[in-house]
Image 1 (cartoon, helix red, strand yellow):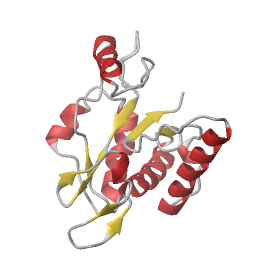
Image 2 (spheres, rainbow, N blue to C red):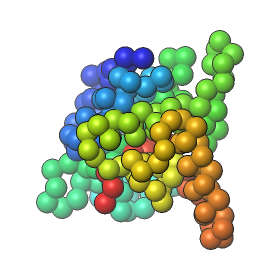
Image 3 (cartoon, rainbow, N blue to C red):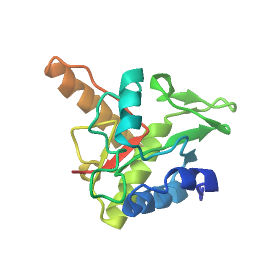
Image 4 (cartoon, one colour):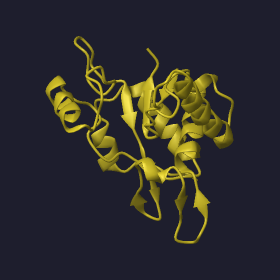
Length: 173
């Protein structure tokens, strides 16, 4: 533990709400899993439209877009480093390390983000359980996993699929 963001990661988040970044910095320092930021976090409407066109995003109402009159975006995507490699995507909720250990990095990160958000006093929504405020969930990686399973069950009961975005955190609206 005791990880820190690189200059490159911090540069990619220069237009992210400072309170959200404070949460991420604290979480990274306390997390059992290293994580970073792989791309520019704030977007124009045109950049978001391109992401929607390519299927990388599903909405134009993204927290990554700096809203009119605002100075910062309110969304952040953080991606785990596993064995020194950025690891994300639908097939990376469970990862086997080179040492043979199986880890679930998104649950570890979400747990650390929850703890840090409560310390800073910022209410967050996590892309693993979109319909709940992260701060209100029980503590720990197992609780984060249960939150994802609960979200998937609620979506299924509504006849809808779950959109899982483990790297994504945003300030609750």
